[in-house]
Each structure stands twice: as C-alpha cells, then as structure tokens.
Image 1 (cartoon, rainbow, N blue to C red):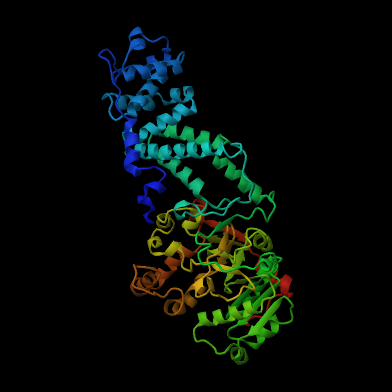
Image 2 (cartoon, rainbow, N blue to C red):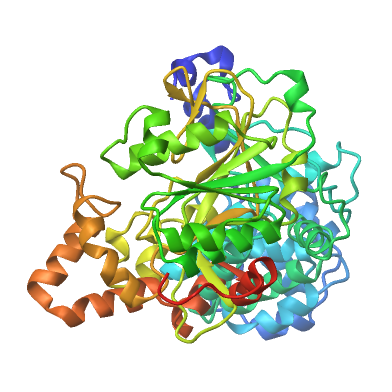
Length: 590
C-alpha cells in the first residue's frame, strides 16, 4: 500500500472511515415515542395478525410528532389493505436498524420468522424479504443466523451497487456481455479476475451461503427462498456469466475475440519493446523441450503438440541415444538435436546443472525459431489451450511479449483412461487457501497451492524480440523478467509430474536433493519436510498414503475439486495420436 490512503484528496470518502462511521451512525438514531405509542408486546398473538388487515391509522398516530409516528404513517401507506403481520414485520425492521429499540423488538421479529415463515414468504415481495434476512445480521439469536445475515447483506448490497452502475452502461440486465474485453486494466487491490469459463467463485460463494443457512431452522426457509429466487431470476450477473460461459463452450462466440486475457498488473513496468511488424505477424507457433525420457514418453509429447497445431516441435536430447534419434528423425515438423559434444562445442560449453542446459537450449531455439511464437515446456508438460492455440495467440495484445500459462497438475488415474484430470490451485479458482485443508485433510496446509510440482507456469514467447533470454518460467530482458505478459483464461499447461506412484517414487531421490522438492531456505514445515518425516518415521506405506490423498484421482478428491471449481478435464488419447503422427508406437525399451 502507498501513502495514498492518508491523502484526503485521493480518497473516495473524504475523512476516511471516521467520516464513514459518523455518517452511518447519524442514520441510526433511536426512534422517539410519544407517551401513548409502543410496539406490541413480545407475546402478542401472531396468528390473529395474519387475518387482521391494515386500515386507517388511529387519529393519535396521524397527528403524532414522534419519529415512530412518522414511520407508522409511512408503513401504513405501504401495507394498507394487507395483513397486519406484514406491517408489524416492517415496523420491527425499522426499529432494529436503529441504535436502540424497545426490548421486545428483536425477540418479536425472530418469533415471526420462527413461527410464521411460510405465511410471510407467501405475502412479502423480494424487497421486504431481503430486508428481513439482512436484519438477522445484527439481531440473530444464533451465530449461524448472524453469519448468514451478514453474508447475505454483503451479497445483496453489492448486487444493488453494481446493478445500479449497470443502468449507465447501456446493457439490459439479462444481456450477457460480449466476450472481447474492452479494457485490460487490472482489478483493484491486486485481485485476479474471475475466470468466466472455469472459475468457481460464484458457485462456491452461493453454495457456502446455502450450506450455512441450512444449519439453522429459523433462517433457513427465508435464506433458501431468496437464493432460489436469485437462481430463477435471469436479470443478474450470475445469469449473465452463465450465458457467456455457455456461449463460449458451445462455440457461439468467435474464437479470437472470445479470448479472455488477464493482464499482468505490472504490464508496463518492465516491458520489452515489441516492433509493429512482430505484433502483426501471423500466429504460427512451435514448442521446444530439453528431454531425457523413454521414447514412448517423448513420442506422446511430440504427437500431442503436433495435433494442437505446432508447426515445429524441437527436441534437444539431453542424453542422446542412437535408437531414439533414428526413430524420431525424418519428419519435417520435428527437429531433433542430440546434445552431444559437437552441440555443446557450438554453444560454448556444457553446463553441469540440468536447468542451465535447458536455458542454453531454449535460447538456441529462440534465436533460430521459424515461428512467430515459441513455447518452452518440459517433456512431462502439455499445452492445454481453451481453443485453437493460434486463435489465442492472434488475440494477444500487440504490445504483449509473452503469453503466460498457469500450471494445472495431472492426477494419477486409478485405471488406464484417455480422460485425464488436472487440479488447479485454490487461487486460480478464486478460493481461499483454507480449502486445501478440506481437499487434502492430512497434508494440505503443508503444500504450496495444493501442488507437489511448480506453481510458476510456463511461457509462450513472441520471437524476434531484441535482447531477450527465455528461461524456464519467464522471459528475461535486461536482467529481469519481462512484465508485458497476458494470461489467457481457461488455457493452461498441464503438468504430468507424478502420473503414477511408481514414477513418483522413481524420481523422488533426484527431486529431493537436486530438483523441485529440495528445500531452498529455512521456511515452515513444507513438502520436503513432509516427505522426510514420512520416510523416516512412518515407513514405506506412508508415502503411498500421501500419494493417494494428494496426487490420485480418487472419487472423493475428484468430486471435491469439481465442487470447488478446481478441476480441469481433457481428452488425451496419446496412443491414437502417436499412431497418427508417427505411424505406430516406438520400439519397446528405447
């Protein structure tokens, strides 16, 4: 935060929250009563008030100079000819919005909704139902009543603010917005935009409200009635977002204009200059990887990206084998570069660290790229665009130097399947990090984002930019990561980091000492500490339990991820794609 929060000239509410509170409190002065004025007693007969109809006011109330008398006249006019119980409910709400009120006021209000909720729901319009449920925020008898009342107060008050602003936009309340954003400005307070196609913020918010209300028999009928009404009303942001999402999924929106980008809030801070000619280039793209893996895994990687539309797949074989090189060779779309002595002589020297060899190879690929864009990923990573990747890249702003993809982590499937499921982080779904403790009850609080692999994502860089050096997770310029990046919503890089338990265990020693699991600093109890503890204290079976809870597509985890908006599913028929692009599977053991 900057010093602007203390600069009166830059505040929305001059005087800060002291002034806000003074204004709020000024509206809450208690009602004044004349000697003969009072609310009904707390034990009054509610059933008789159902049949009693509001008629003319008594003469005394018509002439009353009290603020209570004024409110009675106002409500009498509104409820004239309707049941007196509705009038009484309104009068109680008006009193309860003040700082002080007669002692029977709150208990009588709660009695109405405990004993006569069915009648009230049949008689009151939505405006008075909202007023009633929000009154529970300050005057509920239980913690659940107060919590639900506060939550619905925020929901309905926020809806009233933004729907009022919408009146000035020219859009009808039931009209979904077009897919193309008219601005890429960042959201306030560094918030991430809601992911329209895959986000779970809306259902998680409304579902939580429904569940909380269900725990209290007094507020549940009223709260559930209003949430059902909201679901049935087509004139709100939830319905508009649903229509946008459906149009996108059904292909009714043009692919390129429909790309929904999140713009880096630091976009202009360290931006690589993008020449106009590069910004207008056709969106051809390629992918590069430094690989050291069995040939069948390499073939799946190459075939997947060729099927997506890659014009070139470049593979740097970190430990070249004649059998692999020979089987892969001979395809114009596939460039195979053995990282042998001649290769490293050409580039200068062979770095000892694998990460530095990756960096040297991707720089070489970038310098000789024959496509407008170049994606740098690992052999266990797969681009997962929401639509044709060329359309996504074509829609990127001309001043963007790179498209950044958030990572999703592949779950191990209990049985062989072409359907692959990935999990997102809590943040990507608009969830609070405490959801991780529900998803992964034993280990969630020790995992960054709920992952065992990286959270940084991968880059598709615009090629031809002067002075840049593509890295593993970033595009560097003048010694710092370039900030003129955009993130397409609904597109990811899928990381098959631990596709099965045997693979997880085979890579564990390297990852603990040299790779992504190693602990780089003295931080809290994290993944490396969890694995150390399980290995040393719990025995061999403990790691299998860890893998099942965190990394396996169990029915419970899949259902919970889906409910939380944190599940991504893709059809990935690897065997069929390898057969299509290579003519058949590679020889076993290569």
